[in-house]
Image (cartoon, rainbow, N blue to C red; front, side, top):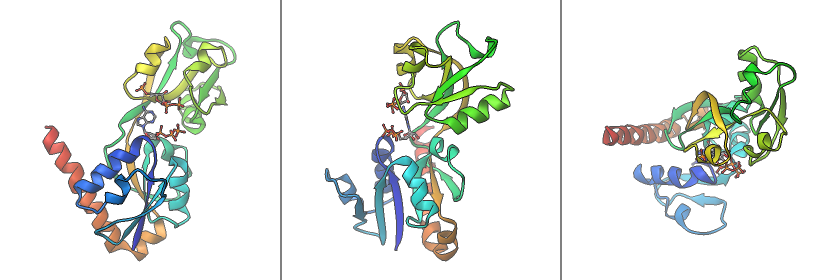
Length: 214
Ligand SMILES: Nc1ncnc2c1ncn2[C@@H]1O[C@H](COP(=O)(O)OP(=O)(O)OP(=O)(O)O)[C@@H](O)[C@H]1O
Ligand SMILES: O=P(O)(O)OC[C@H]1O[C@H](OP(=O)(O)OP(=O)(O)O)[C@H](O)[C@@H]1O
């Protein structure tokens, strides 16, 4: 038996679709229930539905053998797991944005950056040689520069609609984001064959999709 922690929310539907394409028994994941532990109907696999940051915690602690989680969450974590596959789902990117004409790169004096991702923001501005104050925000990050809480934000952009509708402009794209498969280090030693089988099935499906897209 192996266990997989699936990130709830935006990534859930796409992850389940991918498992379905791999031939796994995901019927119970498609049901509209509040159940959080779900058994695969074809394979010896148990799924847990968790929030993104908790996905990392469950895998690091060995409660889940594998996790499907966004690279954004991994970049904020302490990396105590193996990151073994890019599922190429949930594609978006980290960007720096501000109101037009409020570019923090040309500002003199104290610079404030609002973000849900303090580690990513701190690392980025350090690499740029700028000493900034990071203000942690839990959501609606685009609101912060409009209300004067910060000079610029580091946030996720997918379609760009949220930035556009709030009058913000992209100053830089930090990196691409997509969902990854992470694996508990001990599980990878003890259950290598079962885990490799899941990774092989998923990788095949990622390749199929790329072939279909080209
Ligand atoms: N437009 C997007 N905005 C945010 N995350 C996105 C987007 N597109 C894909 N993702 C990916 O989906 C993952 C889950 O996002 P989701 O918004 O469902 O959860 P969350 O960030 O924990 O938010 P909430 O606290 O509102 O549940 C993100 O960690 C990211 O990897
Ligand atoms: O480029 P877009 O397609 O507009 O998507 C990006 C937006 O989606 C996310 O917010 P989310 O919807 O998760 O809400 P939040 O502000 O509560 O984090 C992200 O933080 C951006 O605000």
